[in-house]
Length: 350
Ligand SMILES: NC(=O)C1=CN([C@@H]2O[C@H](COP(=O)(O)OP(=O)(O)OC[C@H]3O[C@@H](n4cnc5c(N)ncnc54)[C@H](O)[C@@H]3O)[C@@H](O)[C@H]2O)C=CC1
Ligand SMILES: CC(=O)C(=O)O
Ligand SMILES: [K+]
Ligand SMILES: [Mn+2]
View 1 (cartoon, rainbow, N blue to C red):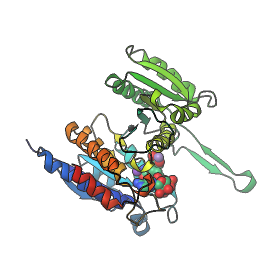
View 2: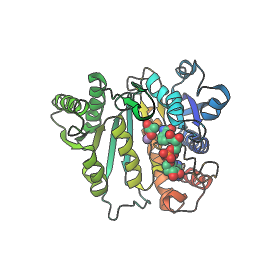
View 3: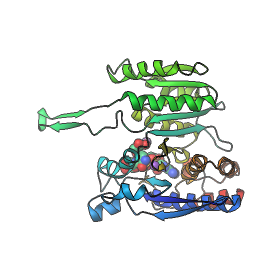
View 4: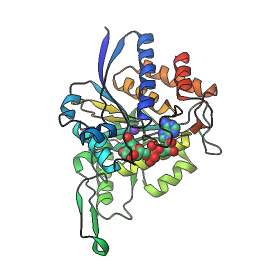
């Protein structure tokens, strides 16, 4: 039976507009080769250009519109010289994550064939960070009062038992089909309420998974271990901000944040999930045709996995590794290839 997936496409800003069409070409190629499914792409021009014209990042009924699609494929958001980042991200990216109840963000990092990690002697690491994606330190609770010397900024971090537990349970479920280890990223030595709570919830949840080994690390030490011994980790569960920071580091130890993929999941499948790479809009290289499309392409593989097309997803990752092994790499990986060359090479290997 031929499945047709209706995908809402939001290239967004900067290099999002370059890497998204490239990844879509790759996804259309694998669909053709596979023969069991195809995509119907609908583009939405939402982002900072839209904001500059309309005063909002997406139309008022944008979330309702998105609910009509099977999944969302997004590039990146942000044009910091013209729109403050908290306006643009909260008006689109974070609005969708929350509005579509994408409470889990899954971000793998593994040593790929053909890639030079900046680590001197990298062991074979394969980590998945499960990031709580709907609350925590990313919060619009707080305020600013007074001016000048008296000025105060308050930013509340919000941790609910329900969502903390949901992220942790997802991590344990992943660990069952992985190497059966979950590490909790904490900081209960410096934060007196949120992270002791996080630790307590972790201790309760782990009792339901006696077959899974666990460890707890403060986020500062964990960041150091990502560099010193990334092979020691399997599944990591982290709060919104800790997971955010850790996964740029995960990209870096693979070779570049330009290759790191991510999936914002509505695990209940009540609303569409959103697939967007770890990296941002990279204004420093936008428009030059030299952005690395691999993060977005690998993100497309995660979308295929979520749709149940594991074989097609594996073929994409294999084609990525063959491309890198053949030396076709963009500048962030020390190569000289353009985005176009990398994309075409991936398609050829497919
Ligand atoms: N999920 C999203 O939409 C995100 C959006 N942002 C936004 O993006 C803008 C820029 O933020 P930055 O902190 O500079 O992070 P960034 O990830 O856009 O860029 C950091 C560095 O990595 C490089 N880089 C990123 N992706 C690359 C790729 N695919 N190929 C080659 N090089 C790549 C950039 O050129 C830059 O030097 C801001 O407006 C920020 O708020 C940042 C992170 C995530
Ligand atoms: C904004 C950002 O970097 C993230 O949430 O992934
Ligand atoms: K992104
Ligand atoms: Mn980030």
